[in-house]
Image (tube, rainbow, N blue to C red; front, side, top):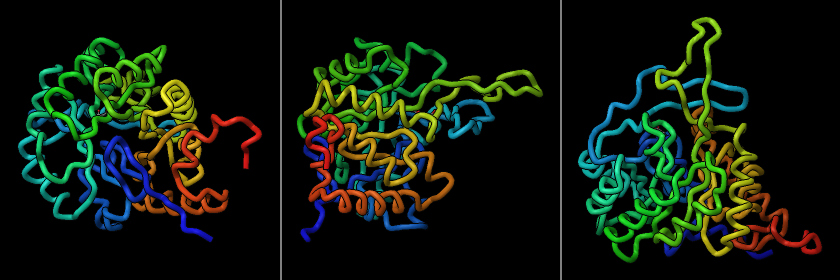
Amino acid sequence: MSQLDFSTTLGNAWFPTPIFTASGCASSGKELAQFFDLRDMGAIVTKSIMTKPRAGRATPRMAETPSGMLNSIGLQGPGIDAFLANDLAWLVEQKARIIVSIAGETAEEFASLARRLRGVAGISALEVNISCPNVENRGMVFACHLESAQTVIEGVRRTIGGDLPIIAKLSPDVTDIVSIARGVIDAGADGLALINTVLGMVINPNTMRPHLGGRTGGLSGPAIRPIAVRAIYQVHEALPKVPILGMGGVSSGADAFELILAGASAVSVGTASFGNPTAIMKIQNELRQILTDKGFSSLREAVGFAHRPESSVR
Ligand code: SIN
């Protein structure tokens, strides 16, 4: 029997396997590296980095919910200078494949981050996080407004230059995700990360007040997987040539397979890693087995398979 080709691409970036970390859930990989070799997964997607160090939102910042969790981190991070000197340098030393996620308060900040990253060796792609729900001003959720989303992506594209793939990370909290997806691709993105967390809230019945310091937070975990599958399916149907990095509640190989059938070319794992730091390896092994058992000779054959007519079902 021929070997499964498990590799994938996002724009011109090639990855030997399709399972990545999700931005924000594994920082820059140092903690995960205690459990497995970072080179054994597709790529690490770093926590979204901003121009300056940032303390993030008030605590508490997390809440467990049925089949999910809310986070209200608020883009805490060391800022681009420390990130380049410490985190990125360390990741390059590990020979990990790296997708750097960036976030800004304005389109200019995104462009200035792109300027700092231009020509830096060892980066496979840039994730442009225009969809963090944990900001005081909803106007800053660029991915909820077509023009703002396009302005950010155009600025990053112009600044970063030709070759580095740009992956725009979109929010599910919109009426028509396909129009935002089309808009950012027209503005210069090469691929899409679908989906960021879903805006939610928990009220503590004892205090009778919102539980999270930031009041609202982003819902992740298995509870949102059907939303991710729907968003990926809709976008892949409209834009079948655009590579999608899928994410949202993946905790098994079967979950990852579902996102791939919907149209994802690679899958990020986030919340599952909090409960099991080796979840990424488990999911990757399970996915490889499922693809083999289903008779696929490559991952690529399975991408978007759910869109094919019934007659082609294996
Ligand atoms: C956060 O730092 O608040 C989460 C980032 C995100 O969901 O994009």
